[in-house]
Amino acid sequence: MRIAEIYRSVQGEGLLTGTDSVFVRASGCNLRCWFCDTLYASWEPEGEDRGVAEIAESVLAYGVDHVVLTGGEPMLFAEMIPLCERLHEAGRHLTIETAGTLHLPLHCDLMSISPKLSNSTPSYLQNPRWNVRHDRARRADEVARRLMAEHAYQLKYVVDLPEDCDEVLESIESLGADPDRVYLMPQGIEASGLARIATWLAPWCARHGFRFCPRRQIEWFGATRGT
Image (tube, rainbow, N blue to C red):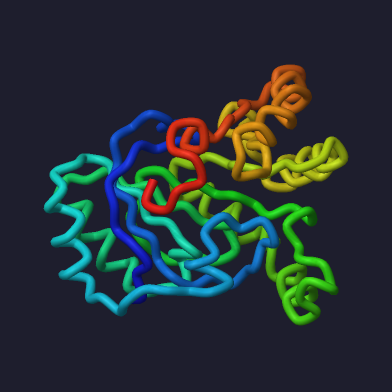
C-alpha cells in the first residue's frame, strides 16, 4: 500500500477535535476535488509502498491511543483490512476518513465520512477528464448508508458558498443522518478565508441543529504538511 506519510499531530476536525493522534495517509484517490488540500495524496500521489506489518510497527512506535487512517482515499486499499485488525488488536482507537464512496469490511471505531458536494467538482477548463469522472463518482449514498449502519460515524461537509447549504440538507435527508453527527466545515486553507465563511455558516448550523467545524488544524498549524 502506498503511504504518503505517517505522523503524530492533533485532530483538528469533528468529534475528536483536540485528540492526540497518529495519522496514516494513504496515497491515491478515486476523486479529484478541486480544493483538495493534500494534492500529494490525490492529484499528484507521492509515497512509498509499505507492507502492513511495517506500517503497524511505525504507528505503534508512537505509543498514542488514537490512529487516523486518511488519504487520499484509504478505502481504495484492501490492505486496510489487516492493518485495521492489527491496530485494533493492539488496543488502538481507529478513525477512518473517507469520502464514503467505497466499502471495505474492516474494523473501525469512528467512520468519518465526508460526502462530496457538487462544489468539489473541478471545472471542465481545469481538467476535462476529471470534471466528468469526479462528478460521476463523488456520490454513492448506498455505500455511505452501509458504512453508517456498520460503524459509529460522523458526516463532514465542506461548504464554500451559501447555496451549498441546500445540497447539504438534501444529502443529509437522503442518508438519514442523525443531525447531531453532522459537521459543516468552511472551504479553504487560510485562516482569514475560513473566518469569512464562518460568519454565516456557524449561525446557519445553529439554526438547523448541526455542528460547525472550524478546522482547528489551520488555526493551530496553518496549511502545513504533517500536521
